[in-house]
Figure 1 (tube, rainbow, N blue to C red):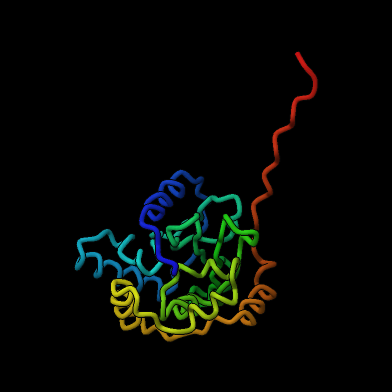
Figure 2 (cartoon, rainbow, N blue to C red):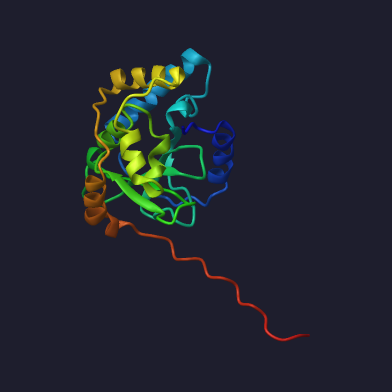
Length: 212
């Protein structure tokens, strides 16, 4: 069973804060604005920072969105949330001419062999993927895709705190379940992956040859 790691959730923020921010701008998807308002309300009710109130659901909010400067974060994405585990974060892919509510979502997984996966064509689709269990375990698409499809395909009642938050989110944002399907993910890669602008690969420093 996968559960968010509270310690990791607090360690991720300093890593992001130390990053060099690139100045991208885009309109905020309306559903993301509604998510912020819902987090504000839930945070006030629970005396919790709104950025962290959805931690059990696997969403630590980056507000306003900004590009995290991991070595594999696309240059043309704005990070709007992270999971709190292993640097995994979600970004809005900035595409010229695209409206805010038709912005693809890219998942960046720095510890995986596949660093970036376009997991949704819109923010609405992204929310629907987490309908039953939240968004923490989406990174498993890069490790155990068949397991991930099964895990996200049915409700789980083993974590009441997470379920209570998801109930609020479903109602406030009118979230509808979107099945996680490998065929759909492959289609999104073929459609959008070539649009990702990736940082240059880091170069190893030269190794000195010879003695003094």
